[in-house]
Length: 134
Image (cartoon, rainbow, N blue to C red):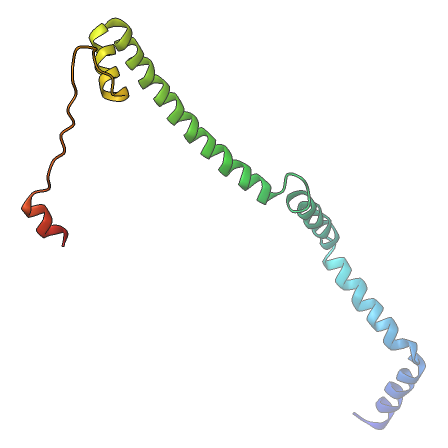
């Protein structure tokens, strides 16, 4: 650059003064805001989602715990229904067959007829079983 151009640039720099830098920052911020207009909307959306899914009564953790509990209760309900079905079948067998009542009374409740004697027999372990357990 020649001297006259240097003098002009220095004069222009002095003419801008101390507020020139501030105006430059403001202008660059204005341009940045114009390019990124969507950021406030995204921030509001993220804060809203955070409040809904984390800090509310129906947050994700509570929802997960409840769904896990519901699935456990459904399994328990299926088992109870199956047990009820089997017990109903057994009850119908007992009601229809009087010998069935006698058999269940003997097996489950250790009952006997007044004129019989019951002997309990215990099995002795085999020699093979003793050798294997040691």
